[in-house]
Length: 262
Picture 1: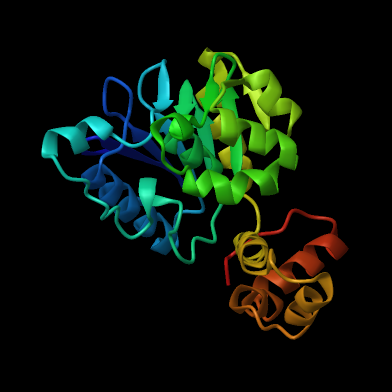
Picture 2: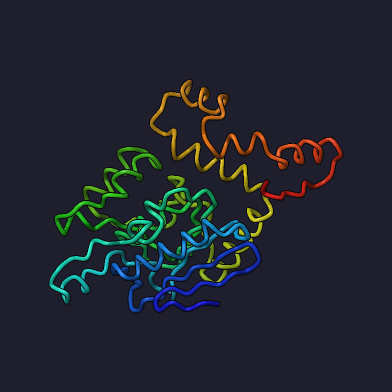
């Protein structure tokens, strides 16, 4: 286990667990964000790690978003959030490995956006979500970009324009959450999911993430052209890999594949 102030990390086989632990509300100031960016960049670049889990310390808050108290105390806003943008995940380039958010409590503002930056979200049943930036006269920028792409437009606009709370039942209804579990089962559930993914084909995961990230704005035929022409680096690597041949052999031989990541 490593302890870098407000960020605690644990390597568990091929899984990296990252805990944001800044009492009382796990709010993120700029220095914490820079640490998180460094942690997730190291995860991205470590060939031994395949999946990450991000969660919050304690039982009440996953993350309360931007630490405005630190801004008020300093008298000036520090917008240097580091290599990955706010929370280390929003804008981290080339992150082609799965990330799971284990939402252990309130995810509000930038905390909600941190969860949205993950690929899969599991939540404790008492968790709640909100985007209160509207009341502070500012923009929930990452959520404004992502939320209307994840859930129905009018639901997303309701959350953005009113700042109202959403409970886990509603979040699950709209497809934001993979699973809702009792609080004492949250990390067990997240770890089981991470272990499942860690046994999967890393080159395929990378190709999926890059394809989704780089082609969301393109017409379908243009995306097919990119894939068929091997014009995305991760897709080219996959189609020319030992793992692709291993998958075919394992299927023919009716045995589990042994993924090497090459």
